[in-house]
Amino acid sequence: MSRSEVDNDIDIKVIDLENGDDLLNGVPRPRRPDCKELPMCFTAYLDACHDLGVVPCRKFLQCLKNKEERINLKHYGLGPIGAQAVAMAMMKNVSATYLNLEDNDIGPCGAMYIIEMLTENVGIQRLNLSENNLGSEGARLICDVINSNNNLTNLQLRGNRFKESDAVHFAELLKSPVSRNLKEINLSHNQFSVKGGQLLASAIEINSTLMKLDLSWNHLRRKGSLALCRALKLNTSVTYIDLSWNGLADEGAAVLSVVLRKNPTLRYLDIGCNRISRVGIGKITDALKSNQTLQILKLAGNTITHSGAVAILVTLDNNGESALVLLDLGNVSVTREFLDHLEELQLERPKLKVIHGSVVRECNLDHRIIKFKGHASTNAAKALTDYVVQNQLRSGDLFHRFDKNKDGRLTKSELRQGLREIDLALNAEERRSLYNGFDKDNKGYFDYSDFVSTVQQLVNEERRRRVRIALRTAIVATRLMKKRPTITTAVDPRNDDDDDSNSETSSNDTDST
Image 1 (tube, rainbow, N blue to C red):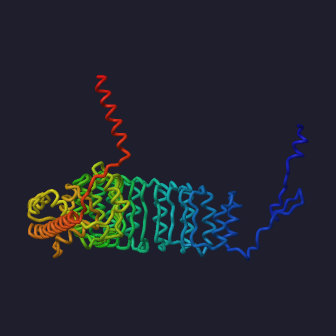
Image 2 (cartoon, helix red, strand yellow):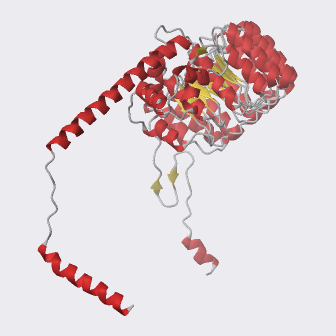
């Protein structure tokens, strides 16, 4: 193909930049709508994109045209120049209150344009600049602009490579009275370490307006985490704190246990994956005995034993004032005892949700069927009575078998464990009804006399019932025997020939022998 033929096949267009017409083909391009029909920020964005040489973002144009309050430009790859065009349009926007620019790689340069926009647009209340590689310069600019625009209530800065020294800017911001409207800040997935944790702790200690703080996935370690935990003891405004993946260890868990006892405002606590051993988990469990405000507790990724998991449920069961609705244990394997206790606890607190791992081998298939597929309703007291009668046991011996600590009392957990040892399959509702039959005074336990008197009464009734059934059966059998007619054996004449032939055959066999 020659060069001229190629030129003829190519559709060449010459555009009039002033009017937007196709001058070569004589076809006018679609006109831009009348500016009177569009918001001023819409035309400002188109002009900015034209001047900066960037392609307009269709999603952003739709938001501007519809005057939406929430503008979400997450993962659009705007870059610094695209952020500049957005900032120029947002300066004239009067409807949006939420701006999400997460993961657009705007960098410090793009952050500068956004910061300049916030000095003009005071309507933005929620700003998300996460995953934008802002760095130290971006941290300084953001903290400075809040001094000019104190209408921000929510600031998301996750994953921006803030360094240890950058914590100074955020600490000064949280200490400043101009940040009184800031209710939520997310500084997770950054590079704050021990010194940064101490600086932020000094600000949290005196801040009285911040409600949600996310510092997960940093490098606070033991000293930084301890400083934050001590600050939470004095803070009376924070209701949400995420300190996961920071290396709190047992010392941090010990300080947090004090926080759970004294802090009356904390509702959400995430301390997952912090190298907390069973000792630290035990201290957190002890703190739950008196806590009445915590609603969500996440302990996933720490060392939680089977007995530790059961101890948490026992503590929640004993604390009738507990407000906990979600307990996250991660992939911790649990036992049948844990499941039994959880079923009983959820009968009393249907809103409680517990996240756990698989069930260990001792939790047999029958129990899983009881838990997930239901269980035929039985009389729990009768089931226990039948066991005593069939095994010819004394109620006192059964009590001592259940009483592991030999204190002369049986609690709900001891009764549950005893029933499991004798392989008496009862669901949670049946176990609760059985326990309530023993603990009639709601003391939280029942003693030897309560158990023996109740069981012995049931056993005596069962034995009398069986005696009555046996007597009734014997009387009926006797009457039937009296009324039974005499049975005579009738010989079928048709069998005579067969008998004769059989006798002849046998005699012949004898002769042949």
